[in-house]
Length: 266
Image (cartoon, rainbow, N blue to C red; front, side, top):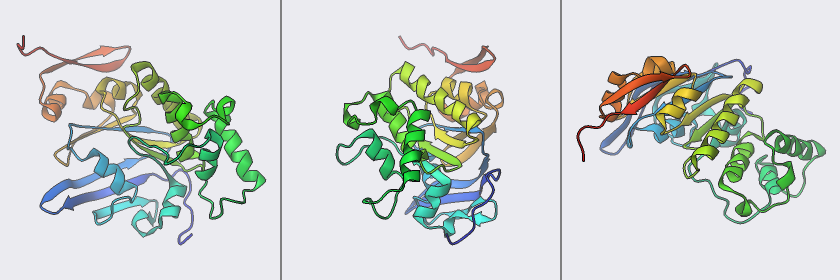
């Protein structure tokens, strides 16, 4: 490693993060932090810059201005294999290029330079994470024979098999039914507590975000519109400014719940 590992209690801090494509500003002066053991959700309308924020933070997109730091480490200076020791990443619609078993997929997630030689510790690590994600019974099943929820658990387990202190996810529940969405996301919420993992994820369902999040970040047109606890962010004015809809916010089981009001469309 080019720089030493930092203590797990350090947060990832974004300072004045900006990114532009030719003739288009995508992110403008975004500052925020992701702490270990917390669940941070990014919301906003289509084109707000949510995926770009994750990809810049994870160094998948270069050429941004500003800083992304873990303690004294500037992540911009690290190589890809070093980044993966800090941040597990779940992209949208992850698919393997060829069919493989659950066990083999997780083993490849260790990213060893030689895929012909794995240590006993490697095999033990894969077995442990399969137990944690309730995947042990399907270790020898082909991934493309699993349900959507099972496939997503495999994808997340693969992102965490190297035990990074952070997990970034880009719409991890897209394509899943309502129950499976909730099962996957609440499993991850528990993981932030039991494993002290800092989660940063994009979710389109505002009410699910309000149930899960320790902090919600709202983006619009590449700008940071709001950030804070769910009850501070899921309020009528911010939701109207972000999504352009007339709304009402009620509280259900202690969480803010967004209701979209009928504006006379018949």
